[in-house]
Image 1 (cartoon, rainbow, N blue to C red):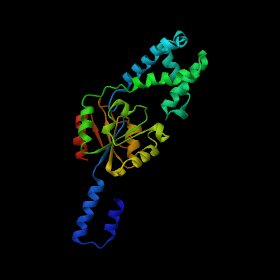
Image 2 (image 1 turned 180 degrees about the vertical axis):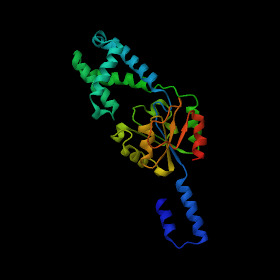
Image 3 (image 1 turned 30 degrees about the vertical axis):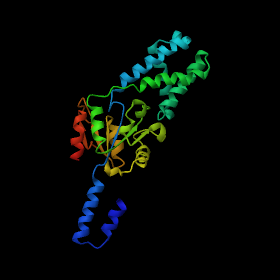
Image 4 (image 1 turned 45 degrees about the horizontal axis):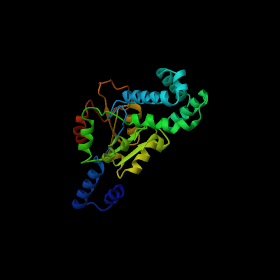
Length: 255
């Protein structure tokens, strides 16, 4: 599309090809793709993680009781957080980071590593049992009929396991990208999965730095999902702000 427009601009102008140029540029600048963050944008993540940690702890009680004899549920979560905090080089891959912690925990208690995969599956199953914000799922279903939809996430939720993969044309995690938002590479790799240009894409997320500034630095428009009407913390302001998901389509149409 960019090449075609440039070729038109380089030709001798007349009324006919001037109109073609305008049509080409308008098509190029029209929003055709909407990419979403997941956690705290389409659902609240803290209750999901709390439920997943509880499911994992109950599983440990049944099959690896020496761990739960040493650690309460809260203490085990703190143990994990301390371990993860000390591994910033792994923060882009939360799956590997959790499994690494589970292996370290097994070594500490005296279990072998055979429990890691089934234990992670218990956690991950609950981690993908999400409750969408009011209106969020209906919004996705409606927009998917008009736009190409995608996901760019730092988390390890899986839209296919959740049951909404059919609504999205692409999904990219920081684990697959090798870097986390707001790094430019994750946005570039997402566009490689999309058929659209940065200027034809709007990104929707809740985090000012990772989502909004991250998307804008590569040329995307960015809509801040801000349900509590927090003040903007500073830096380049979002293209638009929504408090409720039902507001999104009108914001995009008017960009």
